[in-house]
Amino acid sequence: MHTSVRPLSPGASTSGAQRASHRNTVPCVVTIAGTDPTGGAGSAADIKSIHAAGGYALPVTTAVLAQNSSRVTHIEHMSAAVVRAQLDAIAEHARIDAVKIGMLGTAENVQAVAEWLSEARPQLIVVDPVMISSSGTALIAPEAFPEVAALCAAADVITPNALELAELTDSSHAETHIDVCNQARAWTERHGNVVIAKTGHLDSEQTTNYWIESGAEPIAIHTQRVESSATQGTGCTLASALTTRLAAGDAPARALAWASDWLHHAISHGERLDVTLGQDPPVSGPMDHFHHVRAAMPQPHMPQPQVPQPHLPLQLGSGARKGGGSR
Ligand SMILES: Nc1ncnc2c1ncn2[C@@H]1O[C@H](COP(=O)(O)OP(=O)(O)O)[C@@H](O)[C@H]1O
Ligand SMILES: Cc1ncc(COP(=O)(O)OP(=O)(O)O)c(N)n1
Image (tube, rainbow, N blue to C red):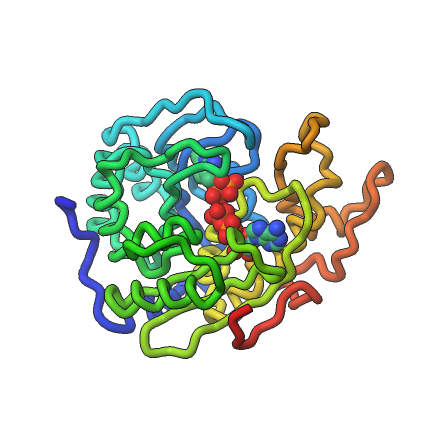
C-alpha cells in the first residue's frame, strides 16, 4: 500500500463510530461501490439502504457490472482518475458525515480512495471488503488484496463476511459463531478497529451480527435465519444501514440492532416484491429495503407488510435482540 489513510490510536474506532456531529440533520453518506443493474447489490442496494436508514446517499461508481444474482457477464472498471474526480466533486459540494466502501475492483482504485480519505478525513469510514459475488465471480483483483487489507486496517469499522474475514486474518473458513468471533477478535487486537462479525455464511439457525472491538465486551444482535430467496446484496445492505445509523449518532448497540432488525424484515418481505422471473430452483432476488415505508403507504394490490412502526428509529421487533452468546 503506497498510501496510509490515517494513523489510528487505540480506541479511535469507537470514537470514530460515535463521533457523529450532525445528530439533528440527515446524515450524508458517501458510498463507493460497483453497480448492479438488477438493483439487488452494489450501489443500488447501498443507496436504498442509506435512505431507508434515514440518510442521504452520495454514490461514487468504481465499476459498472453486467450482473444478476446468477452471474456476472461483464465488468468495466472505472479509472482511478474517474473515481477520484467523483470524490472531489462530492467534496466541493456536500457535507460528508460518513463513507461506506464496497467493491473497489482494482489496486489503483483502492489507492485512489485511500489517498482521498487521507485528505478528506471523514469522521466515519466503514469498509465492506467485497471480494467475490455470491454467484462466484471475483470482484477484486488478487494483487489488490494487500491494499484492501491496508484500507481495512485504517477504517473505523469493517464488515467482512466469513470468507473475507478468513482471508483478512489468514485463517481457514469459520464454521461456527465462535470461530468467526475469534477471527474478528484477532483482527481487532492487531488493528484496533471494530469488526462486524457476520454469520450469514454459516450453517446456523441464527444469523447473529457481532460488534467486536478491542478491550470491550462483544455486542451480539441475534436474528433468526429466514428461509427466503430474497438475500441478494445482504452484505452491502447491512454495511450501508449500519454506517448511516452510526453517522446519525446512534450508539454501536443501537445502530447494529437497528440495521440487523431492519435487514431481517427486508429479507422477510423481499419475496412479495416478486421481481425475479420464475426459475427452478428459484434464483435469489432483492429484499424489500422499503418494507417499513410500504407499511405506511397502503397499496391495495399488495398484501400489507406486518411492520409495526414506519418511523425512525425502528424499535426492535421480534427478529432481533441484544445479548451475549455465540449461537
Ligand atoms: N437467510 C438469512 N436470514 C436472515 N438474515 C440473513 C440471511 N442471510 C444473510 N442475513 C443477514 O445479512 C447479513 C450479511 O450476510 P452475509 O451472508 O453474512 O454476508 P455477505 O452478504 O456480505 O456475504 C448477515 O449478517 C445477516 O444479518
Ligand atoms: C457491485 C457489487 N458489489 C458487491 C456485491 C456483493 O454484494 P453482497 O452484499 O456481498 O451480496 P451477495 O453477493 O451476498 O448477494 C456484488 N454482487 N456486486
